[in-house]
Length: 88
Image 1 (spheres, rainbow, N blue to C red):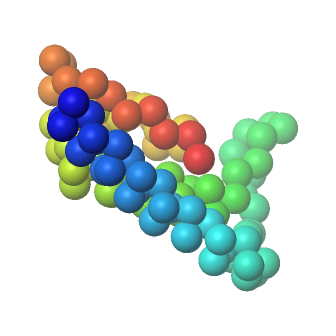
Image 2: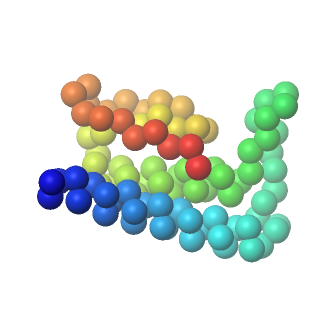
């Protein structure tokens, strides 16, 4: 149970940091420049920054875990470890 509590704290800290970044970005419209990702799919720089913030925080806490990221794709971790799935 203690391991689960530690993991929840890691996730909460990462989410709060990314949320703070998103609040700043949405508060400053000039930071929301949109880039074309595909024919009908657009992604904002704010979304990419939030993904990077979550990735950095979670990687620091669990460096051997893998990732499935909306923008960056799959980043392999140890085969016997879980993966984070990030789609801000």
